[in-house]
Length: 104
Image (cartoon, rainbow, N blue to C red; front, side, top):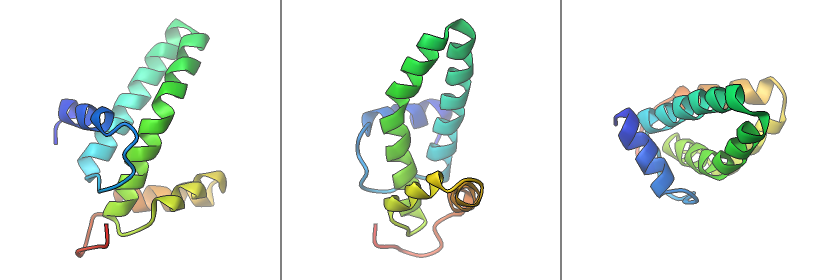
């Protein structure tokens, strides 16, 4: 999946927490969010905060779909609230690929 396809897919599945997201879809969308966030923060703090608020739901949705691809529930995104250890666990899971058919 290319950079543009990934962004288009994530916005078309804006609040869809069902299904699976490939590694390329997740990481390209992550890169887009990071670059756009940096660009908006250089322009205005208010614009950056607004952009972050708009990106919250699609980021959660693609994160849940990425966890589904690794055969884990999207509820594991709550590990984000566990500093350092939770972040590392989610990063490792996001990097992993689907090894076998899964329930999602």
